[in-house]
Length: 552
Image (cartoon, rainbow, N blue to C red; front, side, top):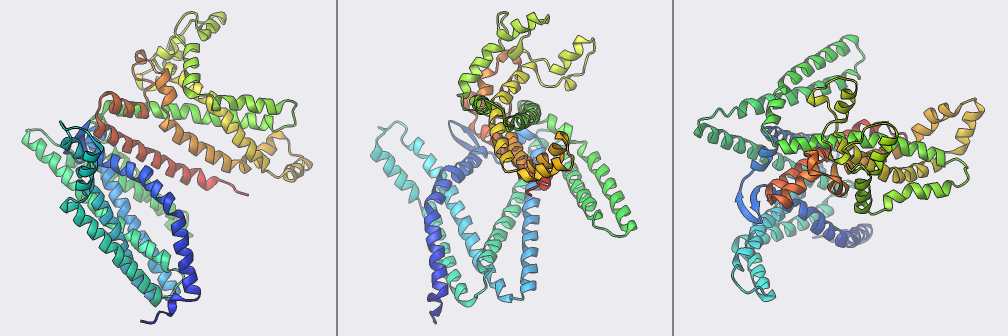
C-alpha cells in the first residue's frame, strides 16, 4: 500500500489530532468517572427495586408510579425526538454532500457505524459488569472483610465469561474502527471527513436508541395491560397513552404550521395555515384534557413538590433579577462609598448557607418575641406563624377582606414565602456584581450620544442599557431557574413539619425518598424526572429568551 499519506501535511495534521486528544484524555476520563458514569449508574438504579441492595429489574415501574401513564407518553416523545433528530441530521448530511458533489463522503457511513457499535459495545460491557461488581456485597457476607478478598472478587467480576466476552468485542470493534478510519483518511482527502464521521456516528447511535425506547415503551404498556386484565380491573392505559400522545403530536403539528405561516407570501396560504394551526391546537388541548386524570394517578408527593418548586421559582427569579439590576445601575454611578455597598450586598452570597438560613429561621420564628413578630406588633398587626404556616398567602390576604379563595388559588404558603425572601436576599448581591460587569461593557460614547439627542434616564435605560444587558440577563435567569429547581440546603434547614409539606420542593422530596425512606430506585427515578424538567426549561428558555438576546 502506498504510505505517502503518512508524510507532509497529512502526518502533521494527524499528529496535531493525536496530541490534542492526549491532552484532553485525563479530563475526559475524569468527566466519565465522576460525571457520566454516576448518571448512568443512577439510571441503572432507577430501573430496579433497590433498598440498600439491588433487587429485581422493574423497568419503568418507578417512573410510572411517579408520573402515572404520562411516563409512557414522555418516553414515546423521547423516542420520537431521537428518530426525528436522526432523520434531520441525515437530511443535513445529504444536502451537504449534494452541494459539494463529493460522493466519497458516503464512505464515512462505515466508520461511523463501527464507532457507534464500539460505543454501544462499551455500554453493553458496563451494563454486564455492574451486576457482577454489585454482587460482591453478597459474596463477602459472613466472611472476614480484607483488601485481598475484595481485590480477588473484583478481579473475578472483570473476568466473568460474559463480561470478558463483551470486553473483547469492544476491543475488536475499536481496533477495526481505527483501521478503517486510517484507510479512509488515505482514500478521501475531504476537509469535512471528521465531521461527517461524527454525524454518521450520531445517527447510528440515536436511531437504534430511539427504536429501543419505543420497544421498551410498548413492552411496558403491554405488561401493565396484562396485569390489569389478570386482576379484573379496567386498565385504560392504551386509551390514555394514545389520547395524550395524539394530543402532543397535534400540538407539535400546529406549531410547525404556525411557524411556516410566517414565511408565506400569498394571503390564502397564510390564512389557511393559521386556521389549520388553530384547529389542530384546539384538538390537541381537547385530547390533552385527559392529563389531569393521568396526573391524579401519579405520586401525590412528587406533584406537590413540583408545584412548590414552581411557586418558589416564580417567586424568586423575577424579583431577584429586578432588584439586582436596580442596585447595579445605582451602584454604577459615581457615588461616594459605592465600593463598600458592593461588598455589603455580596456578603450574603459568600456567607455559609446553613448559618444564614438558621439565623433567618430565628428571625421568622413563630415565637411572640421573634424579631419579625415584634415588628408586626409595633405596626399594629397580628403576629404570624411564618415558617410554620401552611396556608397560602393569597388566601390569607383574601381572608383579611372577608373573601374566601378556592384551594388552588391560595398561592405559595407563608412558610415558602419566607424561604423565597431568604433566597432573594442571598443571591441579589451575586446578580448585582454580574450586572455591574455587564454595565462596564456598555459603550459610554453611546450613552453620551443619546443624552445629546435629548434622551432622559428612562429612554437611556429602555433603549440602550436594558437591550445591551440582555446577554447578562439571559445568563442570570438561566442560572437562577436551574438553581431554584436544585435548591436544597437552606430549604432543608428552614422547613418545619407543621408547614405540612408546603415548603418541600422537588429536591427535598428526592432527598426524603433516598435518605429517609431508603427507596433508592424510586429516588433515582425522581432525580431523572427532575433532570428532564431542568433540561426542558433550559431548552425553552434558550428558544424564547435566547433568541431575544442582543450581543451588539
